[in-house]
Length: 547
Image (cartoon, rainbow, N blue to C red; front, side, top):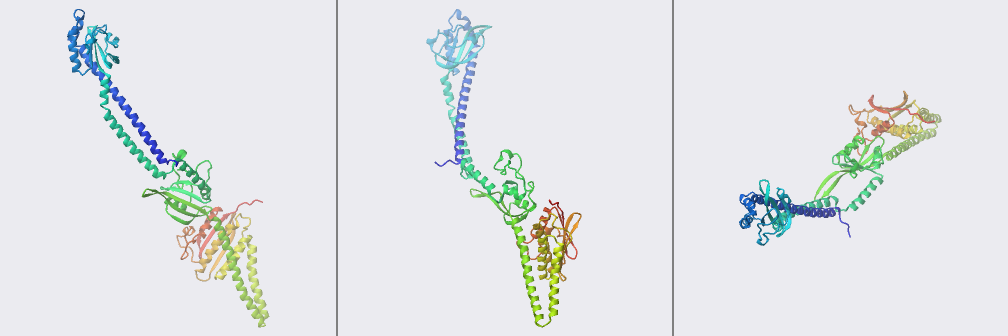
């Protein structure tokens, strides 16, 4: 059989609880009504018996019982009082229990059945006992002449009469029980429909399986997953998201806050800022808006973020619960892109040099064909001397081969675009603790931006690179002859997505942002100033390298 859903189980439990509660309430009300009827009968019999015992007529008849039989006088009186007070019997008796009156004349002269000790002691007493007329509620009151008990009066109502009175209340009790049952059933049905809508018809076992599956998926995927609620607070994050964002992963603490409310329900959910999520990404998570392959920079990573609102369908209505964001690491891709850009620069430099060498070789061949051997030799020697001079200068001044190769490639590329690149290095890079990949990111992006800026300016077009030592730090300065950074935009130009180039499309505005992140990761500073054009100054402290 198909297992019942959680809503169906809850519905049956609630209906059963309502039925049991209705039965309990009905029984309690019936017992209470019966007890009230007995109490009312006791009060009525006490009032009637006390009134008879206090009557002077009854007292005088009881006092003269030793001389004159009081039955002829008291029997008609007792029957009249029984009828007028709506009692079942009134019995007047001697202190020795001998009946003087009874509703059944045949019982006159017999002994009274019931307790008389309290009455003989001068106190009224109410009880339920079995008499000649059957079970009854009766009250016996002493007839006193001063302090002497000269007789007793017993007034009673049969239990069957009390039950008839109680039964008269049953319709009202049943109506109340029916109303309680109907309202409880409607409430149970409403709760069941609500649970069916919320749980989507799943049973507790299926919900447990789904939770286990989702928990495994969250912590097994290689993408970071973050769920935020409608107020922008982080509800769930998996381990990969914590690693990508640099948040400490506590193996003992659950990352699923909402799904495990027992230990953490008393503490508020953290916001992105409280978890240390960087500004732009934190703003995206807090906004809950839709995002498609947006790039956000953290302290050490370049992340591609996608975000979709989490919508719950409740019948014909939909409700936004929050948003689900996925994070992908693009740092390695960017590193490979930087290396590819470096190789492309070197390839372009070789291509341009090949083209220039071909032109120069044609010139040399033409001079030789014209018989001008001396001119051909001088032209070839000067060309070789200039090329070798640039190579020797870079090899001698720059002790990092990757940086030297990058500068040579950028110099050829700048020359091809009509820009002169001057490079001077008096600081040792090899022992500074700066990785070659960071040098490629920092120097390559700065020179590319400087060449683009110089090209857009009037001649002479130049770019200068200087690497020096200053108070235990490596200072890298890149300047150009371009228009410079507009006033007030020195900080904005370092943000991702900002570019001064016209028609900056997708992927623009990333280079300087990566430079800033690399410098901050190395513990350095980046300063933007202006001279002839823009000047970017980077100061990176040296790190002690193991022997």
